[in-house]
Amino acid sequence: MTKRWQAFVGLLIIALIAAGCSSSSGTNSEAGSTSGTSSTGSTKKTVVSVWALQEHTWIDGAAADFNAANPDIQIEVSKYAVDPMKEALKVAANSGTLPNMWSTWGGSLGSFYAENGLTADLTQIAKDHNWPSLYNQAAIDMGTYNGKVSGIPYHLNAVDTWYSKIAYDKLKLTAPTSFEEFEAQLQAMKDGGITPLSLGGKNGWHVMRLTEQLLEHFAGPELHDKLNSLTASWNDPAVVQTFAKLKEYNDKGYFPKGYVALDPTEAVNLFYPGTTGLDIDGTWLDGNIAAAGFDVNDFGVFKFPTGRSSVFAEMFQVSADLDQATLEATIKVGEYLTSAEVVNKYIDSYGTPAALNVTYSENTPHLKPLLDMATKGSFLITDQALPQEVVQKLFEAQDKVALKEWTPEQAAEGMEKAAADYKAKNKTS
Image 1 (cartoon, rainbow, N blue to C red):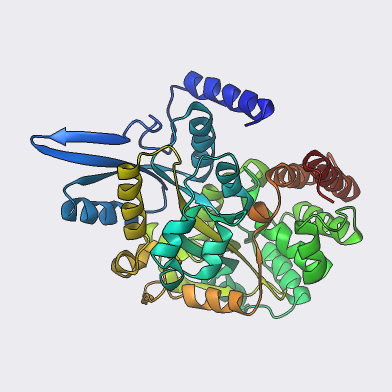
Image 2: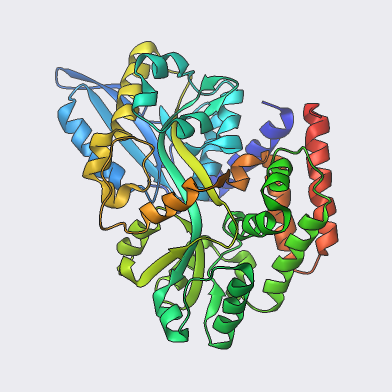
């Protein structure tokens, strides 16, 4: 790891200690403390520590099922919300306390752990266990770095536009079929007393889902792909138009009040009762709506009026610092948690599985339509497609445009500088 990265994580450790060594969202703040073996009476168990996302409610039952059927292995699950998970992993990576297995995302988010030798190379295991017959190949590919399989995929997600039928019925609206109609509906909602966009700006990624679709609209698929691969200049009129549109939506009051600092979870909570009209979210939202006590049939989905949906994968990465017996136990756990058997049993809350040969639930009616949209055209979600240094600049640009600290032109220039700095640092053309 670089000195800069170590210094950053060191400061983060100090901050977490000062905060009481706890995450408000996690259930276990002692990173990696449960790895290894234990004995109960005469039975020795291999303990497999797993860090999962808080929204993965299905994993509790699946872990209990596994533990009951495997007396020699004990799964111990700790949960974190999205951003606390990212922070906890950074701390654990620097302090050598990563768990046996952890949830993360494909693309550039998961690449750090693979490229710094923190994950086991699963390439031969994937071949021996015939993963292409078990998982969607696209999900495997999104967790493969420099030809090495780095994770066991469990989700292949599609993200697009959700609307509240309560809000739409009130205003007698139907799903838009053009960008112009989409924008007219934003204004109609505003005029009708409904905040149009249920997006929270804290940590950047929720608003990013709108930014990337606006960029897809103004740049078109070919330039959008080139921007994400850093083979085109970000100081482009299409990028300026994108930030100008974000500014326009901000100025017109299309976002919740104070949205720049609003946590995405709080923003989505406004969407459930119809206080807001639209959310840009993923295939997992049916489960979240039901868990929050609302009826999934009060919501609908439509394709954002561009040609492609945003997609991304989630996976379990496995620590490189395991002995052979613990590695085998961890792989057994990972393959079980991502299996069609588990998916089919917990399909109502599992989300969009990477596993093949599964049966979808009637309680998640929007999952298949979202996947069908993505099948017609998709791009890798921005915070996995871009290097993380550039992603952070995008989040900064979104905020500064909203707060009127940058013009759209300055935002585009800032993005281009971040891309150029990254390429110079990594000597890419």
